[in-house]
Amino acid sequence: LDLPEDSGVIIVNIANNSPAEKAGLRLGDFIIKVNDESIDKPSDIRKIILENDIRSGDILRMKIYRDGNIKFIKMKLGKFIK
Image (cartoon, rainbow, N blue to C red):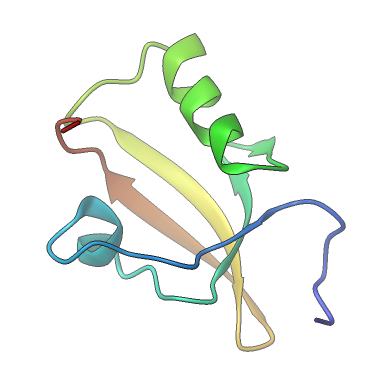
């Protein structure tokens, strides 16, 4: 895939009207870091949220790779819906 990092998460699904969609994340984006912490799997993002007591309305900072470029995205968390 010619990715710039060995660890990260590729976005394969984005819910309509979700915080991810509103932040401008796209299918195929490769998330490298969340709040300056490297991630290897989607559950690492949840772990960062829980361990840092991040709540609805707080901002996650993401370092992503898209179309050959590194980008930084801020995503405002929404409420968790089961």
